Image 1 (cartoon, rainbow, N blue to C red):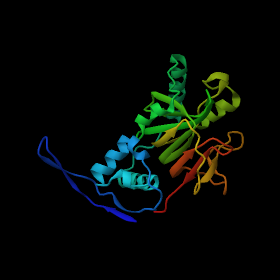
Image 2: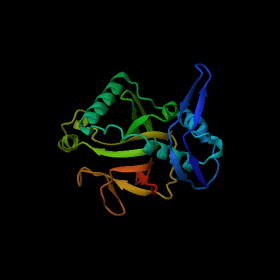
Image 3: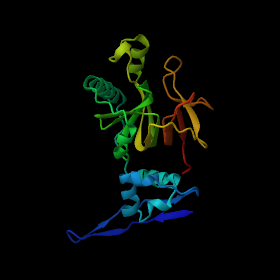
Image 4: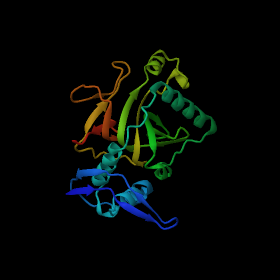
Length: 241
């Protein structure tokens, strides 16, 4: 199926103005099972209904995801993440949440933040595997996370601090390896369906970047990233242009 989303106009009845929506482009979509999960993503549903003139309940998760990626790629490039500064913020946010005991332990509470910029890193605590930080203040833990338009980051100073055990966190560790992107899904339940994805690995003892498992190449960006429990915890895939 091919959907073409051209510039459209919408009438604002409150002020009587016509607003032109941006051209998103043409995306070739794959068929699949229909899902209802998009209704719990207010940001996504609003985007599809108001900008693409589509019914989100008639699309698969993959179709929704690819539309969002196409839309993001049509926008001007955002300011790159400053890795060292972001690492400092993540460490500070984590310490503050520990101090205030404000870590969100029910991943369902993170659903309202879907569609926002998120940072994910591996940290096993309270029966959960991953930590999610949103807008530098909301911090939650989950066993499954999915990011769209993801970027992989390693703060080299933080990596050395962790190796030498002189970081800001307990036991001298430091949050220095993380992935940023748009939060697309999150759950306390583990989901191991990663067909079509390839594994990603990072080991501060043997390297200073995230790398693909199959080809051992440095991985900096990906359209779609899954964080799941298991021996391999990070999976990626990139759609063809």
